Length: 434
Image: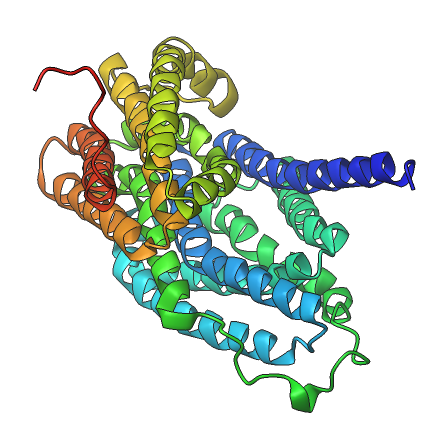
């Protein structure tokens, strides 16, 4: 049996690499699509397309990834117990439809932010609605695939989405298309196209019926119990909002300065790149925090938090320098930006990402402690602060910049307060004078 262990480890490593590379490929393809679009659109059109990309990521990742995670957990549990997964899939569809309704409400509320750049709020709402529907279909497909460990098809959804979006962008670029709507449509339709291409194959991935009959399948085996899926959706939605909405606010308020708005969007998109790795960081930290909490080892939690905080300071300082020194050059060479914001704006945006990374530590701790509502409340508070500052204060560019930093700071402070209140006080050190 000895030779089987290395083979199993190798297979696991290859699977993890395949899944990770597919997600990196999708993120990279989106950036390439934006870069190609920047060479074909005017400043106002590029700002509108980038804002659409950020908005649809907020709705899609923020809302529907929560259902994917819950579906993955429930399907994996049913698979392990030999149960039919029919009721889980039905519950997943129900929760997805509820969150799709929420997404459409958000679409109606956010469409006016793109109205100035796209010409009408109705047109913006239509494109956002298509994108929300596409994201819902895509994430609904992925949950059961991950739960059944069908990682080839799971990764395939990302590869197909990336390929379709990139191919459409190349065609639009070669044809010299300069209209904003066709470019936005590539981002809107690509997830839906991937779901259509792989939908039939994904539907055949189920627990074998020979284990238990569908009649014996529980009606709803704990899916979304106690509203957990909705708290997760609120947490992810608000978190995505903090990282995505500042450029959208600038675009909506600087319609008379499209070059400056496009420059801000470009640097903001580049400086939010570390946010793409936040889910992976949580996936790595969550088991360790869960183990510490389950054994009541608060001292280990404090020690781990302190070490991670020091690491964050060092890495964060480097990221701020990268943001100030290199991002203007990249935004010009890759995205063709003709105007870039002042250096202090880049430094603040980079610093806000570092603050958010530090907040991920506290968020992971609370999720491990089964307190997603507290974590969600912190991100909702930070998101609210960003909206108030970014929408009401002037000048718009400075308001959005400071709103993102202060919003992330609010999240970090609230998470820290809640975590400390939930933990037992440290034991007094021996030898200390009384």
